[in-house]
Amino acid sequence: MQSNIINKNMTYLKYSNHPHFKYQIGYLDHSTSYSNLTIQTLINQTLLIEGANLKTREQYARKILKISKLLPILIHATQDFSLFPITSKNHLDYILINSKHVDSIEQHNNHCSIIFTNNALLNTTRDLNIISKKMGESLRLIHHQKLHLSNL
Image (cartoon, rainbow, N blue to C red; front, side, top):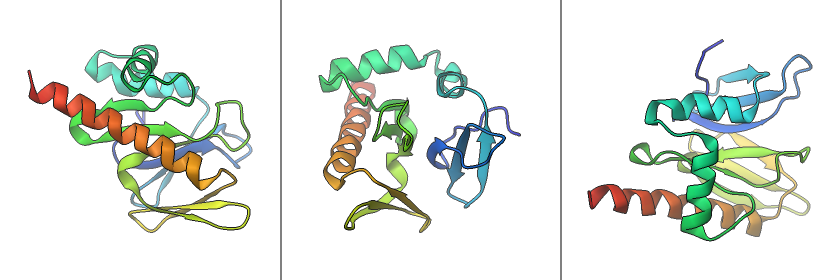
């Protein structure tokens, strides 16, 4: 298993259906990785390169977006890599989605389908409005950081 499985090619992270692993991570090439590490550990390993951690990125999102729940996590602004949740971490349908790789979102009767740029499909019981709002916040966070970096 890779030591750093959260990278710019991931499409989503969710609770695993595999009985031996807690999390499942999907990628653009349709491959899947599994992990028993906590989300905080997985994200902190990825942010270590930039000298950041999950706590500081959550504080940054709170300050910029002026929200307190379901915070997007800016991983690398220069690579347009930001993850957004659509449920709380303890929810059975917990998913973190890479906003860069979402192609479209479709509302069906009792669920939404998130279609990624690689044509992979992820179904969730969350409402289209919540998913769209959280994705928009994630994209605003990337945009804000890019503006900040260009002014340096």
